[in-house]
Image (cartoon, rainbow, N blue to C red; front, side):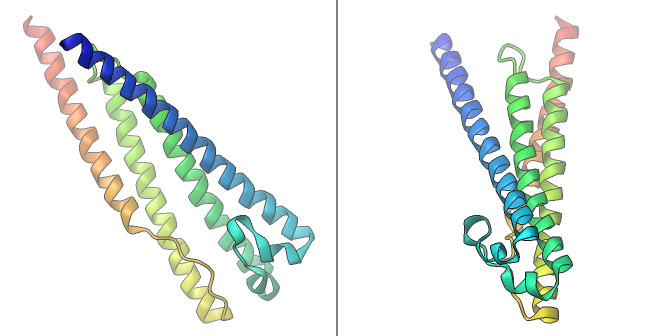
Length: 178
């Protein structure tokens, strides 16, 4: 019975690894597409009308290139950091050893993931604040990014990291007593 559950756990981790790779590649493509469309709009200002996923920032681009560049920079940072989180998840999954799952390396990776999720929350807040400021300043209302779930995820992953750290301590204590 135990062998079957171990095989199932390994299969689940393998599927999660594949899904993490898909998410990583997807967010890298998103960040790259935003950068490429920004580069094209630098040369052809009318290209700002159809940025990635139909985002229309032509009015903002016409008002001020620097306001436009600032907003697009936040979008790129947001996508790139999400890709970085998924890359860190891939690294973490690859480090999990099912015979001794609680390692300081996995705990540290989880903690670092929580920090990056917190950074994503900050970028989302900055983006929302920047969009509100742009609306007041220019009359243009770019899309704002939802931020709340990233703070929740950061907290959740941080708690899991602390549990893993305690698991490392308990695992070390058990190895010393055996």
